[in-house]
Length: 181
Image: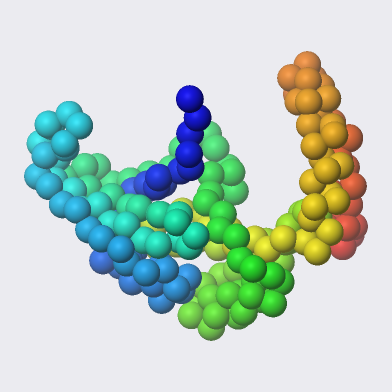
């Protein structure tokens, strides 16, 4: 028994139409389909919703629910805004920079390019307050992933014991942290 792949990832949105248009215009995602009901199919509870699906590339689907009768959506007050996010892969650094320029030209505040060593990222928020990341692979990604694979269990064990960042892969963000000093 094995999972094939993620079917879709769903988030809540404030306005389904605005969300579809934002992802279409800013991230070039195609609007795939919409489903709407006055009751929840799994529970049969009365709760009208609009469920929209977007093509996130390579068979990946990003979905949103607008729930007009529910209290206003919020965020977990105990989790920093940078933690919960969705990351999309782009082909290369040139594409990443093109997206950054496109987003900024549309008035969207973009953070980065951030050097994560194995990939490079930009960050921004969608109109619902969800943090979005675009990431491109580093040219030396394969070699760096092998280095990380060799220490992943040691790192996890040390973290589990100490709740402090193990130094096995400190090399990953050295350039990023040194550039800020």
